[in-house]
Length: 138
Image (cartoon, rainbow, N blue to C red; front, top):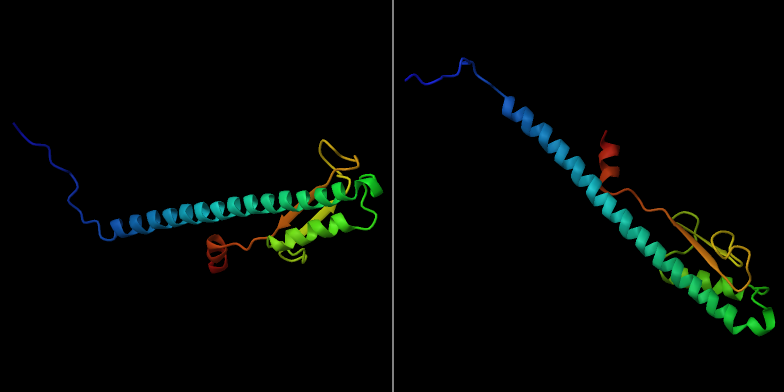
């Protein structure tokens, strides 16, 4: 019985090093996308919670003044309450890091144009984390 032997007897200098470097770069890219994707999802959840809380603050003000204002916000107190609560949640409406839009009545959605309803939209601009560092290095 004869054992099969490899026909290649040449050396493979540096082949493993090249494959390790390629594999590490791919793994680093996947890690960067995963970390930044998780951060973006967390920021989205945080902005949604801030918008919900701000809308509830404005709705509470509309309810308190409903007998006088009939669901409108002529003095801007409901809008101010929404902006105050959004700022307390970290969305200062500074135009750089966040933009908070308060619509009374709402401009979109199921209750668009109806008095007694509030729509709060928070746009948050989060800085790129891990992938931003990779892009600046390229």
